[in-house]
Length: 126
Image (cartoon, rainbow, N blue to C red):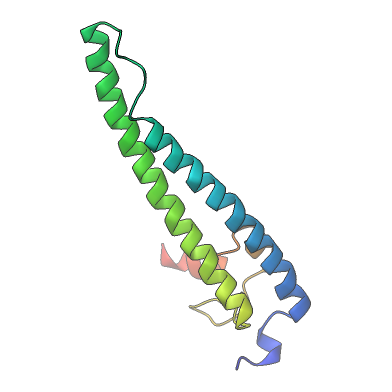
């Protein structure tokens, strides 16, 4: 168990949990939209247009699918990171920098709730 002095209070953890759960819900909705857009890309209604336009449209459709696929992959990683953060909240290790072992600032965690490193550790990485 983590020493009480080196972790956030239960009240702080409850506040972070609420932030994370809200972000998970929004991220899941965004992912669903991306996937829906990807599925709807299959028919863009170009059946009655000229062959030249159709060729451009098919190229654009391929690029759009690739872009949506990349967005979906990034969104899934973001969701996984948020769920891992929620796990850390529940086992009371949330907010500890994995490099220094010190608490990550509340301001940073409110902006990037899935952060696992303090600003100092992140900057030292560069």
